[in-house]
Image (cartoon, rainbow, N blue to C red; front, side, top):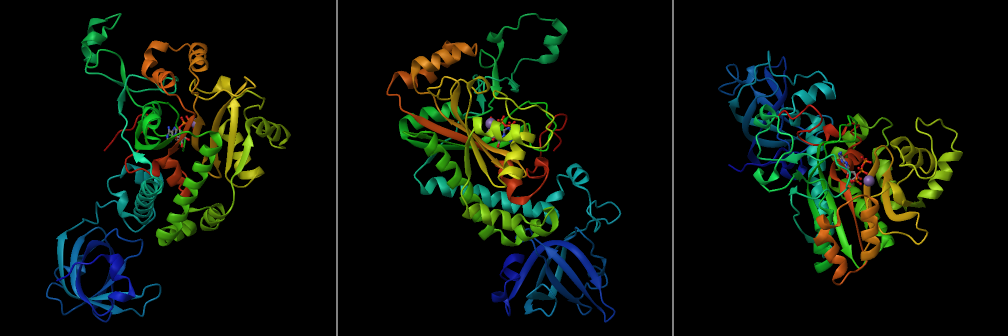
Length: 466
Ligand code: ATP
Ligand code: MN
């Protein structure tokens, strides 16, 4: 007998077919007339399908009437048109087999609503809930769009190393990777570690970004992108930071900051448009049940149609200085904008995505292209309502002398970056790129307020369970 998904079974086109469904019980209701309604879900769609189980089933009393939330079953039967509200089809069961029971005394996902915090403790079971099923489907849709978008435009997908000896941001906050035995070292009270005894012969870390390596491929192959895990040991317990997250980093040769902004805007719009068209049922769920103002779908649709604001940092500072709100952090030219400032701009002042660019060079890494004013660099951040910074990028400094003097300013050892400076010695070209945090994109598309709820198993300070 043909196995079909609940998603397909819910479609009118399946009416009349006899088939097999497999899934997990969400609810069971017994009617006085001597039959039961069982709702099952198999993850293929937000909605469940209703199974009608009649008393004539041989295991009706012994098993069907014992089914509770979480039990896994197989059902064979005929798909019928449904008279019920909000469903086009239902299945009249001819045979029901139980794969596994779920003791209602201990199964955590009972009908009542659980807090997001509680569900995080059950990260292994939360994908069985409506919310986390929907997050997983939307996240998958976004990943698929990302690859499609770049592949259609001739970008090459490259894989940059997860373990690296270079600190791309020059800002620390890296996880060290070592095969040295820390507890033995602690016992010996060694003062100067000799890295000759470590696996890579020098201090090595989990990558914070694949950008520098991606630049080497862009400066040979033109258009490339990475899509992989990145790690930051920042000890910030915010709703927008993870210690392990996924980043997409396109890098384009013969491109400047304007090209970079165009690419970022087109890219985000494509992700949002695909989510709207391919995950409409899940987005309606987020719109009604998760979004505070029930305006998610409207917001995404408007963004896909309208132009992002593009604003130099200096003008953003002027707007913030005139704003009639009290910020926790005072604003003046030269500061690194705080999340409250970014959110004021994108949520209150413009009420749409904003690309800020030309930041003070003192707050940005060495590799960003220096403007002629000698005060700013060609950096850009894309800010969106509800999330704040979703993309950070820049045109890269491709002039060797300026790059080297910037490295000196930031106390970096030029020798450590010999291969990076080689790109400027041999056939250097203007180039640009950015990084999109996948989880921030998923947050934006779902309205989920905490980033820990848009990745299957969040890694945060003090938490690496599962
Ligand atoms: P923030 O200021 O929000 O900490 P950042 O400026 O350190 O971010 P970038 O180095 O520009 O971030 O990284 C590029 C993108 O990666 C960011 O725009 C964001 O979408 C994402 N990102 C950065 N740090 C994290 C994190 N800890 N968890 C999840 N996503 C992150
Ligand atoms: Mn940034």
